[in-house]
Amino acid sequence: MTNKNAYAQSGVDVEAGYEVVERIKKHVARTERLGVMGALGGFGGMFDLTKLDVKEPVLVSGTDGVGTKLMLAIQ
Image (cartoon, rainbow, N blue to C red; front, side, top):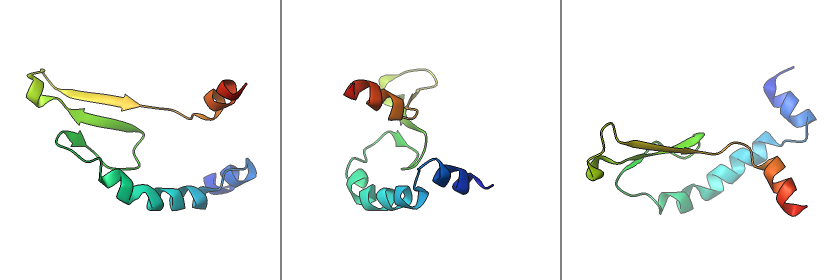
């Protein structure tokens, strides 16, 4: 079984996910600014803090799946 099949069997539409990414690219691009590292699609966002005189200045922010958190919030 491929990962794609495993996702499909659990109710995840991988192709729909890819479509969403394509649809939001232009909107995400408008948020680009100096210091942003990486691109859309990563599992974390990185920001260069050189301007703040921080040693080895990269701020990394990430999220994992929000599904269970959303379910809890709805309850």
